[in-house]
Image (cartoon, rainbow, N blue to C red; front, side, top):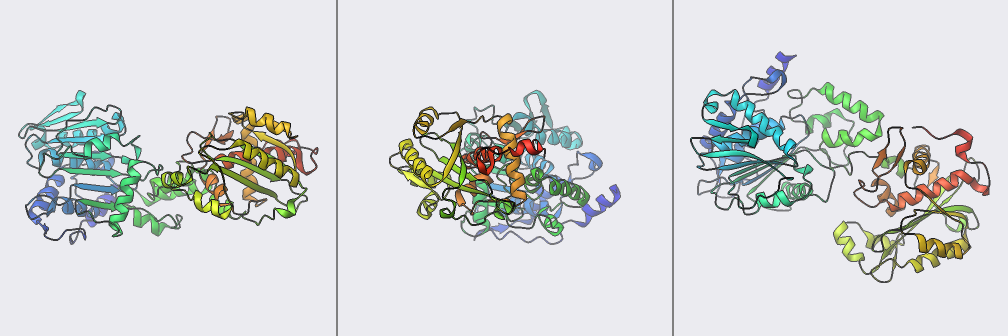
Length: 544
């Protein structure tokens, strides 16, 4: 197997270089400059596993990037590209390429007093690339004799030029006043905020003739992050929607709507497949993801480089969508039902969901959701959250209350009207912030029961909701706001296997999903006659 891998690597050399289509008018490809960069890296050696000690011969896709970045020059002789964004799945040789670029900028760029920084979310992550660079120096006598390692400071000093490569992290953040020649940003998606990125890339390299900001990352999960912002810019440049001659984008990823089960797709988005990673490894990871929906998103994020919502996806949305059976609200008049109330902060979404138990074996649990948001901040929220609240409001799927805060009195009156239409046996509520409304609802004649948000109370109905969805025994009418919230759920699991929605880790709103779970619990406990046996009593708690 090692022989095969070495042969495979030799077969994947770049046969014929063609400059990137992003080369600007007036720029030229300087083969000599590109050859210098490629030759420097080829003099380095691999530092991991069966590859240890072998020459770092660039794979075709790696050499393309290096020749584009270091070989395409402006009329003044300096590099055209100052920023490179490389987004690629894991195990493609990302860390070694980043370390090679860091050493090239430090030692092979002929920049006196050059300051090159390796950046990551924390010191441990930033050290990954640095440690690879240290191992490369140890295996190269020419560099070892010229570089002074200062390992306690995570610094390599190249004595002939007085330049250095230094590790920085987001957690140690006092970075103003730097005179940057190069930045290697590893796993940009893991940055906790944009502070380090802004300091390193905005103005820090102004005094240098040709600074290079080399950003290399796997896809992330947070679409409000700095990495997603740069990802979107890269997509815009790739699609021709934006033009920036200083920005070099490379993205190896599967489209969001692609069939993630197809091996031909895996080969397209993993350019080092068969060299740094075996197809068998991907097959094993895929099989685990196929059998366990919780691992699907991890496979898609790490192996297919897709931006998924959370690292652990709970609700398989294709199964949820199959339950979009139509709901006839008028036909439900007089039917027994149970409510779930999740009060937001006064400036956020409030959710109230009714669940109607089935009348017979052929009937389904029918879900009727209602949502409210303050009228005055509707447009602001649309722009800030990039969620079509305004469209949902026009469609009647979301209601607004006057002013800039949720008007609880309006909601109480609305629930009172629902109580005239439907036989609401109980309303379950989250204790947080609901004291006054609960008293008011009780005054209107409703039975209101507190509902804990811990594992004990949330786990049984959460598991039941998944079971009923997979069995297509619920009907939700395809309500768009509820669908969005279901897709946002991040599930927390305790050692005993109990589950509950995790509001802290769910990056978007899940109020409607929580209200649905609470209402479903009451429906499961009491059934369609209001005093029947609980489904939990019939078969015990569901273990998934």
